[in-house]
Image (cartoon, rainbow over all chains, first blue to last red; front, side, top):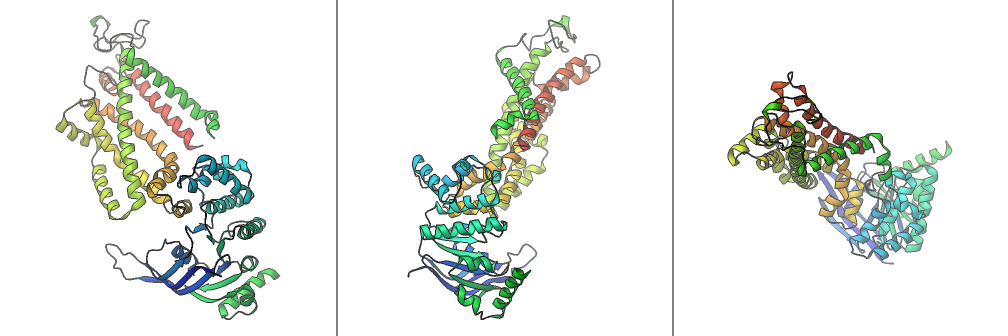
Length: 248
Length: 266
């Protein structure tokens, strides 16, 4: 299988810009020597506590990171991202139909074609065609997240980063969105980098998983491998915590 | 949502008042019952009557005719002033807020300098260089109005530029200019609209102040502000001289404020 994404020795820093009275001294090492690859059409889970560099990694892959060293090779055009908070990822001043048409509009696709493709996509993500007329604040969190996924997929991408796409939703809706992502993954063959802190969700979704702690990747492997035979103490802790929740 | 707007009592009332005022202003451009500058010694400071429904001023000129003409002048000056302030303010605020960096610093410091001058003083300097008259006042006040709008727009852009929907627009390949003016600007509208209404009110009042100082609308032409300041001396002998222009200013300002209020609570 071909690799869709290769990351080699990636280092990301955040520098304290300094101001008139403060010198440029502090340099935070957000990602330390991160290397991994993703195969075409797989779902790779990225697990770690908040602040460990998950989002920094996503930003680096999308080219939004300024200070970085190392190599990122992405074998696909316009990577897209689904954000954690569906309440800030849709423009509140625009109707859903407008938001969905926007990526097509800037590619100068004709109006009929645009509407046809938006309708198709709405059907795929399981939304009513009527919601095109609504503003984002008139939809529920789950519906919004579906719209966000539809908007990302309308950009004709083969690679999607999902940054905790379900952690802002309640449990029943979480399951729906996960099923939707899995369905789209199957139908359209997109590769998904699935960022989460919920090990159970990752177990349901992903083929392989990476565990991350304070900017380093502790271990990576297939989900079964990592879950049944964790190598690092941190992973064991995470798994224990997840199991504890189950028992409660 | 557009339908709901007119069901809202405040917005509806504001619209009614504003449209009546605009209609009167419009009529005033073409027709006034008397010549607004024609003096009549026999009617000095006359009270309300059927011939002069708002009475006459200290030169015997018909107040109603002068109010109609004055509303036109006041309205034009206020609208032109606010337009200059808003257009330049949006451009400056959008670019500085969105891009940031040293250009932002430089422009904002210049704006601070302009902001530090009282608008009347700025206008006085302007008028002493370019001469008196309506258009110079519009220009001077317009420049004095830029800083406040630029600051409002800038802070809104700073607030919105890192929102997730802006990030995803960027990922979808939308250009910076389109993100600024198509994606972000509509979100600033509620804040911007209410500050436009407040700016409009300030412009009406500033125009009045300028006319009072004799550098705005030149007599014998009327503006609501200049009529009000002339009427000060006759406040007790002819209260109707001050009341009618004053009421017109209030209605003009009230109509727009109510509309702004309705828009905000949408």
